[in-house]
Length: 138
Image 1: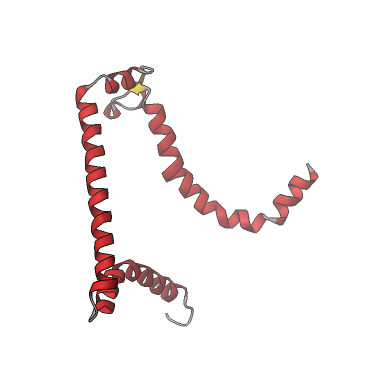
Image 2: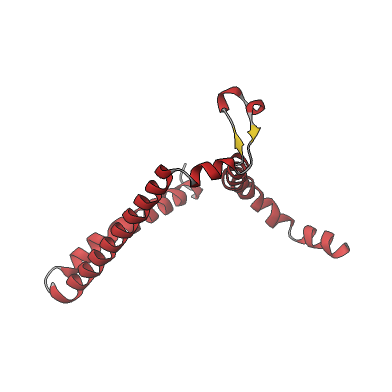
């Protein structure tokens, strides 16, 4: 156990710096997933509070898997995902081919116009943080 206490002491600063992230991550990512899994085995009216929660086991899953509307919505989701994904990829490949091989004049402008929205947000965030952490600017 000496090595464990020594490791904690050696990495104390790292743990202190990681603590805010871990608290936020656990609060907003891990807890909702675990609580949603717990709720899926219960029936609950949130207006009445936690005391109205009743354990129903696999009944919610049985109800969902035997419901025709669930299967219809699942099938619609799969169709929309496949159709939109295929269309987007085909159009992207066609546009890339068109920009690289067909357009001779102005292709650099179109490449920049397509790529600009992806980089603008990163540049804006980095400028804001650099201004925030810059000590000479009040």
